[in-house]
Image 1 (tube, rainbow, N blue to C red):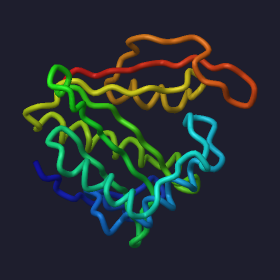
Image 2 (spheres, rainbow, N blue to C red):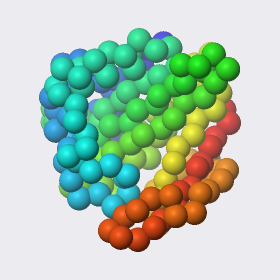
Image 3 (cartoon, one colour):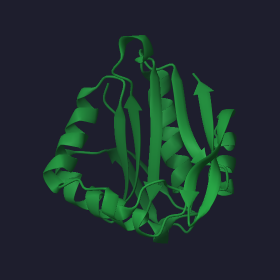
Amino acid sequence: MNFISKTYHTKLGRALLIREAAPADAKQLLALKLEYLKDTSTIPLFDYEYSNTIKEEEELIQNLHQQSNSLLLVAESDGTIIGNIDLTGSWRKKMQHTAMIGMGIHTQWQNQGIGTLLIQNVLEWSKQNEIVKVLWLEVYATNFAGVSLYKKMGFKESGSIEDFFLEEEKYIDKITMVINL
């Protein structure tokens, strides 16, 4: 099922295009991921641990595109990719109706409504998808903005694991959130 590109404006009035990622986006997408992983305290991955090459990033984009229960969207402004969201559907037959969300936004573009738009587009696509019925994600309990955003979009907390993440020598609980379509 193809995604139809849509144009929006950020809270600051900048034009924003949300579209499906293409293999040609691999270099920009990789640079974006490394940028927002660099100083994050809300994603459990260091930039140096994300070891994809441009070729591997291309393959990731192609693999998600080929899966009927998966989607990779990018947010672009003036030709520059500034955010992404991936919906990774389970390959297991008994769980193929489930898909996990992962999202990141360039640090200079955060708090401008881009996360809301990305999630909104994933939800719309998922509701039209014949396979996907359950979306889920994991979030740091200390990521109050993230938890608030997900609740606003209709996600509910479905569980937590104490002391799951270790961030700057402090243990942080993991919250799992889910939405049934």
